[in-house]
Length: 144
Image (cartoon, rainbow, N blue to C red; front, side, top):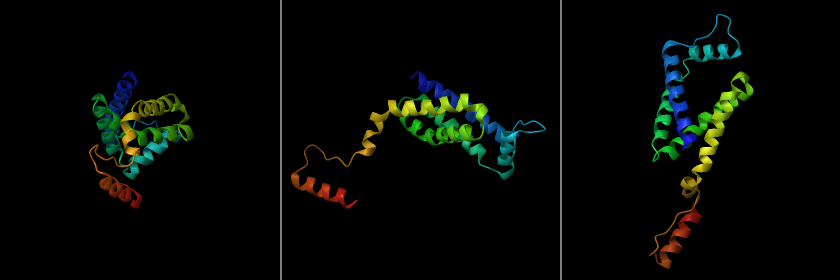
C-alpha cells in the first residue's frame, strides 16, 4: 500500500508538472545540455507532452483508489518502461529517479498479479454447464 501511494503521488505530481511545462515551456539554460536540447526539440515539434502529463495525472489519481489501482498500474507500465530507457541511455543524471519509478511499477504488478491472472486463462464455464456445452466451449477456444 505504501509503494502504491508513493507511486501515485509521484505520477500525479509529475503529471501536473509535465502539463505545466507543456503550457509554459521547459526551463532550460541558455546553453542547454543534451537533455535540455532534447526537451527543446520536443517542445518545438509539438510533441504531445500535455497529453502525456494528463495521462500521468489520471493514472496517479486512479491509483489512489484501491478498486482502480490494478488498472492504473497496468496503465503506468509503458510510461515507467519509457522512463527507464530514457534515463539508462540518455539522461544518466536521473537514474536515481528512473530506476525506483520502474521498480515501483514492477513491484505493484507483482503484488496485483492475482488480479491479472484471469486475463491469461482461457474461457471459463459456469459450474452447472453440461458436457455438450463444455465441448462446444473447448471447440470455440481451439478455433481462436
